[in-house]
Amino acid sequence: MAKLIETTPCAGLLPLSIGGVNIHEINLGQVTLVAPYAGGAKATSDALKAAIGVTFPKPNRTNGAGPRAIWCGLDQALIVGGACPDLPQAAVVDHSDAWAVVRIEGAEAEAVLARLVPADLRASVFKRGHTVRTMLVHMNVGITRVGASAFEVMAMRSMAGTLVHDLEQAAKGVAARALI
Amino acid sequence: MRLPCPICGERDRREFYYKGDALALDRPAGDADGGVWDDYLHNRDNLAGVVRELWHHAGGCGAWIVVTRDTVTHEVHGAERVGKAKA
Ligand SMILES: [Zn+2]
Image 1: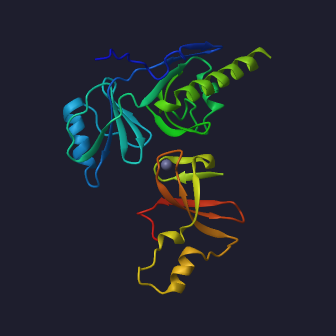
Image 2 (image 1 turned 135 degrees about the horizontal axis):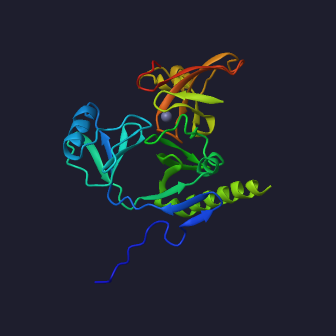
Image 3 (image 1 turned 120 degrees about the vertical axis):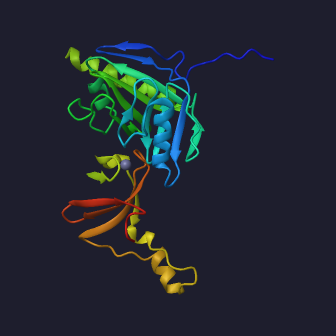
């Protein structure tokens, strides 16, 4: 049998350090999409709570710190940082390796994302643990605030190169403006 | 323009895909008269004023919503989820 080599989505592209931001890749490990069936929302949330200690998140929110549940669309959430329990009241799909996930942090992280994203990510309205499904230029992404000046940005794995390119260009732009 | 997604909150117009008059939700019965189907498929009033339109939050939560807005004043009066909305 051939020896297979694991390659992360952003291998060879990250890390980057530009002006006031650092961008590096995050490996979320096992990722599971959970979409409760009609009428199954409460049973699914209760089962998640019992098994991994997090409830199904409300829109624009995440729950948990170890295993996390990240809201990612209408009646959908991603379970990351651990295995997903058996959930008979929900559609459950393995998304491990399906996402490119990067962490962008630093004093200028908000300014960099403001160039790319049409949603309001300022700390006064978008707090730690808040998440948003939005667009980064023309690409669908999920963005979660994970610290005072740190964000996790998720895009489909096939778009890893575009994600890094867009973040890099915006970071260079912000850094250049700071020199004027 | 910003649209009030009932799931996500008020969001930029760039996140939404425009479909057209919410009349599209009011599908006639299969055996309805040809004229009724003609109206449903092809005929739209070109209103100046309050309109009810289908928008898809394609760059957000993925919900289809019905937005009520005024094409004269550009005022957005509200939005509701398809399925919860009356056709
Ligand atoms: Zn939405």
